[in-house]
Length: 141
Image (cartoon, rainbow, N blue to C red):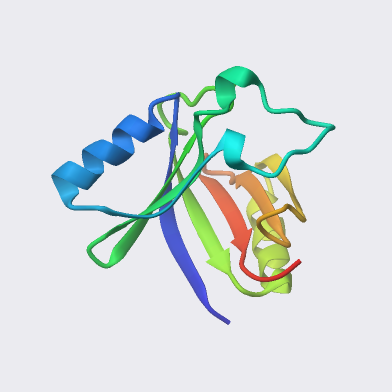
């Protein structure tokens, strides 16, 4: 089982600017960058016009490390203390479930662990210490 931890920056509408800044300052290489408008359409949850150009997910490589980004969806905002989360990536759904369930003990679920268009098991949970983790499972649906 492979597992890695990556910092994930939640931005308030300025992820594109931050990505360009880190490219220049840290020599970052953009590995992936997708806007909300580029995501697969879901008629039950239409993308608001003001969100279409915002970053839904981006990954930069800086040296040997990866740094992930997303803008908050309009109407949501990060505050000091929850702007940086830790993304735990694994290739094992059962391990993702175990980690998610252990972290939620005395914590708070921000997004239940579920099948998404980009991961067979993805969820967001804040643990009892106030640290927010995104659980991302690699692999096919």
